[in-house]
Image (tube, rainbow, N blue to C red; front, top):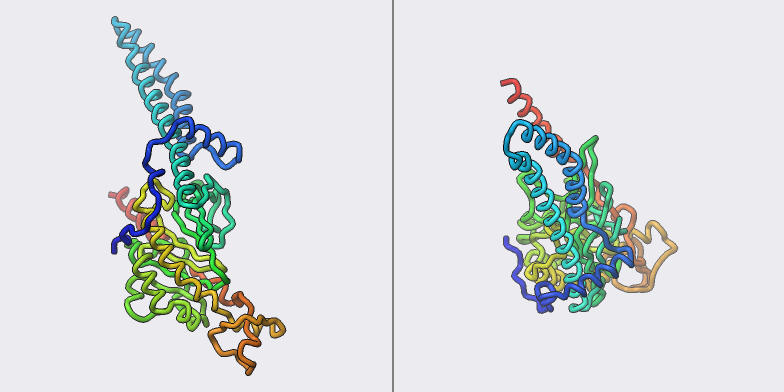
Length: 370
């Protein structure tokens, strides 16, 4: 299934229109003063690589040049190794410089884009305090290029990365995400999009017990695999009414979804905050279509809270399930919140990565024996 077609009106001009180099420099200085900026990882790697290359290859090139000079009558022959090395170092330096300038201009454009559309921009946040599944894995957790809006509810668009170490090796994973603040805490529910899975299955960083899988009516199961905590099946059916299921299918079928606490997250393996206007139109359209239905989620209440704390009740109406004892309507309804058993899905260990690695290891060993 292809991504939804751009259909949201917004000002995309700051993403592509010409920029003033002095304004870019001034904004970069402002970010440094706020302590929310710094050289990108690619720029740092390029600079370090150039320094190492210079330290290693300059002596090597000099030795080769001296040897060639001693064995040749032409002094120009000896200059060839040094010229090649100089060209490599200069070329690498030019690429690093353009990468640095491009990163600064990108941040400036995203900031102007955010302002033009009534939002704000933050260059970087280390270890963002969000409850989604991707935000508690590995180390070096950082969210970059955050674009935030507050109306009609808080929404944050961002790119995110974390690093997982395994012995001497480490792997960095990158995600794009959209975080939407909800009115009340809801049970932990995950919609694993079928359209973005790989040949090995789900691309989510967590796996869940199959007993928590819930099949919904219609074609919903063709697009999403829904997981909800055991005992919360009726609650999931209350939250995912046919009209809401249709919104997710039509607008978010290529995005994984997680509801946790009072947040809804949309996950993708591609960049979310980008200079591509079509991506922004798609995401704005998806979020806009979904949040119009979130008001009815605010009426959900978990009657299990009354069983956990019989003396605690709220006067707000809206519980969708009958309480376990008789009470005047609207007098004893649970406060907003989720009972302990519904706050987090139970996860399971997946053997797929280990099996794949073992298979590659056996294949390599077999090839060595031939």
